[in-house]
Image: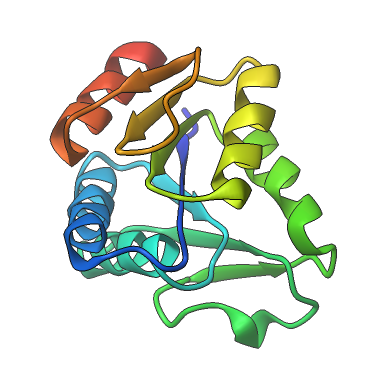
Length: 150
């Protein structure tokens, strides 16, 4: 049986409370045995990768750059695409479910791609749009993912 791939998307420039929530989310994702997919860079991507990495989780970074070295230090599998923000579609396509934390227009594009592809999207303090299932925190987000993927 294959493991579920959970994408976590969010802003590169979030405040400490959301980064702390992202790190907690990463820990929960790893504890549940999911594989984490992110954009592989800073902010929410780094924090969630740090949390997953700290609990032995597999972290995959789908990078916009051409070089694997641009990944944050907690990405165990860096994938250098060289396609810039078009990689957002790859993140959405790869995931079985998406959790958005905060974010700006890049996060919005990933949410839109995921919804268009029929993927479940859970949001923690992110864009309030039709189709995004709201969660108050990391624990509720992972609980929602588990229900949706069972």
